[in-house]
Amino acid sequence: MKVITLFRNSGENIVLKDEDQGPMSDYTNNLSGIFTSRNVIQIDVTGESILVRPSRIDAIHVHEVSIEIPEDTYTPAEEKESEAETPVETPPPETFDDEVISD
Image 1: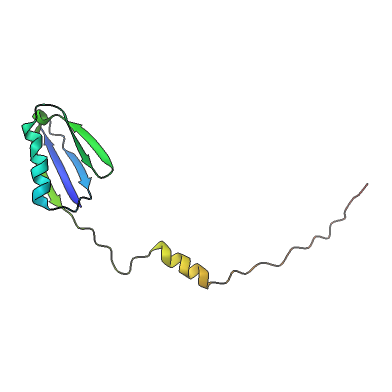
Image 2 (image 1 turned 30 degrees about the horizontal axis):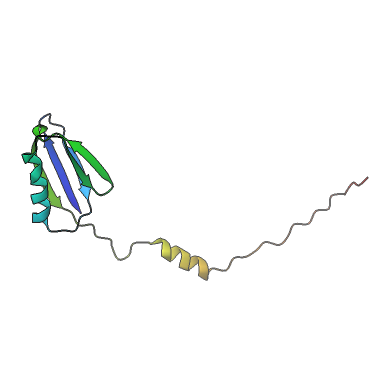
């Protein structure tokens, strides 16, 4: 996963996350095109898009983050397997000794 930080002139940074698996050099080359544009541009990342004005961005920082899932992590599939192994006991039916009133 790549994390993109847009450093704005106003001091308020914008942080985006992208699941792109391509090479970092290709990714940063594509983003560098932002600085050559004079118009508002659209940046598309996984699950979201943002429109930015290049003249308001001082710098862009991109770094990769790896997300590791521990081997002992619980998964929903394990729950289904354990439920299948556990027999379900049905309680006995309740009996009612109430009088039935009929017309």
